[in-house]
Amino acid sequence: MTYPQAIQYLYDRLPVFHHIGGEAYKPGLANTIRLLDALGNPQETYKTIHIAGTNGKGSVSHMLAAVLQQAGYRVGLYTSPHLVDFGERIRINGGMIAPSYVCRFVESHKDLIEEVQPSFFEVTMAMAFDYFAARQVDVAVIEVGLGGRLDSTNIIRPELSVITNISFDHTAFLGNTLAMIAAEKAGIIKPRTPVVIGESLPETRPVFVAKAQEMHAPIIFAEEQVRIASHRHVADKLQVVTDTGATCQVGLTGIYQLKNIATTLTALHVLRQNPAFRLPDAAIYEGLDRVVELTGLQGRWQTVRRHPRVVLDTGHNVAGIENVVRQLREQTCRTLRIVIGMVSDKDIDTVLTLLPREAVYYFTQARTARALPAAILQAKAASNHLHGTGYSTVAQAVQAALHDAAPDDFVFIGGSNFVVGEALEKVKGEK
Image: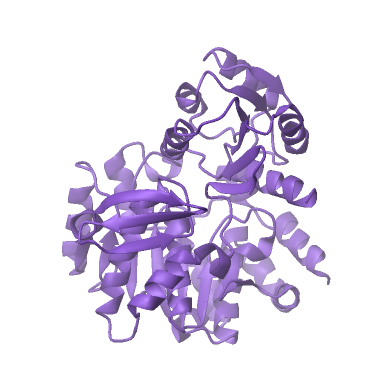
């Protein structure tokens, strides 16, 4: 079995949320327990850190992994979804899982997969846990897939739990109030295990406090521990100064990362109190500065060209798009051009009310059954006074935007992980 054949088997044989949405969602731990029992419970052979939240959990996961790696630990990192290559989901010290391991895992455990009938995410997670054990990682940073309480990653017993923030997304599964969503995310809080809350709201704070008390878990609110006093962009880095006067440089330039940085610094402070971890100041500063280089993080306000400037970002729900638009309004350019496509199960109408009317739009659709057709997105956008042209593929939309753009224009590409992934293939393929 070749690597492409192994990946295609997983896609064809198993329900994939990334592709078909809610039909692939299998809440609960029954399948996970069966898979991991059969594999000898590899997740129990190394330390873990568990990250949940509506937005920011990927960025925080990568920043924590980068610092731990810089401190000398062998670090596994499990995140989802991937943008271009499946291997992005499973990394050790920044390197993607070996294709040969993927092939061997699928071939060796086909009978188990057929018997358990897990989701794509459940198998991918089991593969990650198995790979981390086989490669003897010291610690693994594990990003929750969806929610928390019933997410298949919730089988681990972490050294630290982190919940970045709560906003509306996946309401069909997690609930239609912030308190209900918070209750699902709070499900990762474990007995006597510290939990860091990145951002709390009046509706969510009592939920977190109650769950932490129930679990006898120390709870730390990042906003009470670390405040970013000022920030500025230095080349392709974000330089931040905390209210204590500490200065650090982070290799991510999205303004929305300020809250994620505060969350990460708080999480690192908590980890330093754990005798199992040694995290010198130098490792923290260097890890944050080199986060992209160390972990391979992509799609977070990522600049891929200079003239015109082309930026991609994976923000795809209302809160994520609000952050993107806030930063778009800070850009100085002749013409703002936006390549956008979305999946049909998001709050598209609200997102469209947030987007800048002065931009020129290139509406498109990614290669997924979940994609909203470009023509429908274009029509919906027109009713919100957003105007442009529809394109049947992301590659065509990106090509058109680049063709139209002057050197002093700004081209933004986003709306969904799928669009960003296909755009990365397009723009990098042309370099």
